[in-house]
Image (tube, rainbow, N blue to C red):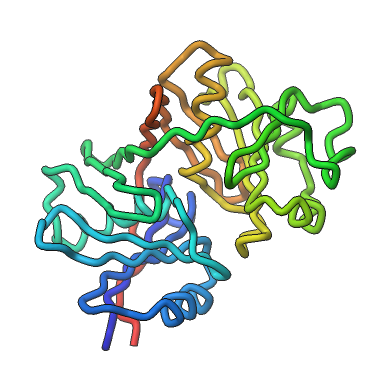
Length: 265
């Protein structure tokens, strides 16, 4: 059985920016071991698997990193919506619904932008984990955690940009990933910046993380008094995300670019 695949750079309007995701459209069931093996073979942050349903705008969606299945992934959901429209499977006029391990997620098209509707995941305040004590001397403004992230706010965007991650220490916390964030530099075109490190899910640094905005968005909306935010992810590839937090949901929008299409054998 061959599997159609679309390689998409999500949260970027140019190739080789944002975060790459491989989107696989399944015409028949594929076992979990094969899905994980394909994700490992491709070696990028996420491989998404779409399963059609009787409703032409509703799909099953699962995400795999090179190491594990992921409960929630923003960039690969955006990439999935983009790939479905690029391949002509949907026309982009209707909102798409994806049934996932995190419940139903929705995506709608606005020109060349895709907007995701995700659940908010505010952080629970708490101390920086012992393993990370001393990583940012005098620079920690706030910290806490979610079910997925260790969440650390630093005093400057430069402190986030210049951080050299201690991946062993990050992994030893037991959290799936570290979300590091700070207010953006004034007049930089963003409200906040972030980086995400996930050695426990096989991703040393994630280039662009939609799901992180489910936590960072509500935090910065409260801090800045705004519910219309722009985030810059300061990875090597760079990414821009448009974030609109609500009480229980967060809208996360961005663009995407197709890099290649083909078939997996």
